[in-house]
Amino acid sequence: MKIKIKKLNPKAVIPNYSKPGDAGMDLTITSVISENSLDISYGFGIAVEIPDGFVGLIFPRSSIRKTDLILSNSVGVIDSGYRGEIQATFKKTGLHKYDIGDRGAQIMILPHPDIQFEEVEELSNTERGEGGFGSTGN
Image 1 (cartoon, rainbow, N blue to C red):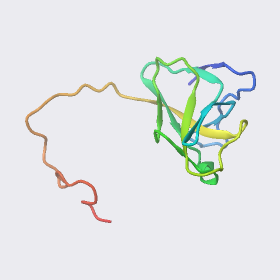
Image 2: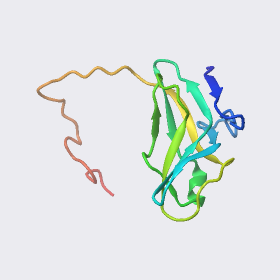
Image 3: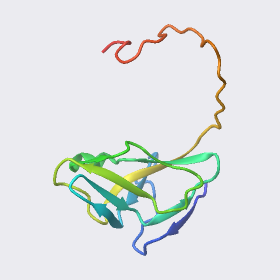
Image 4: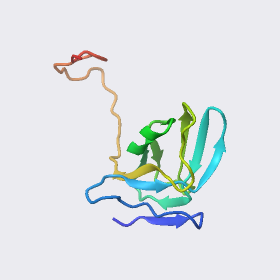
């Protein structure tokens, strides 16, 4: 699948897979958009044209464990109509953070179904039923 991409920063890096079989493509930080004592927002210097029926999902990289950062919205959602810069905001829990030029997140572009909800009076029964948190064991 080919996705159109635009560099918004001359130092932007086109996302790519680090190794064969990887699911996520690394995003390289080109700027600090904003920073305060609680969080930091990074820009990746790119905009993408995600086709209708697909979504871009932004996840932290495993290297995040070397920082004191937590991706603030857990998973970023890039809708197909968005044409702005790909960004990510992280909550700061200490002093170690990413620098410009670091790979700071990863993107996956996946198809998604067009969901239509149907309101009903009853749902089908299952073995689990209404059992919530911890209902299936430890």
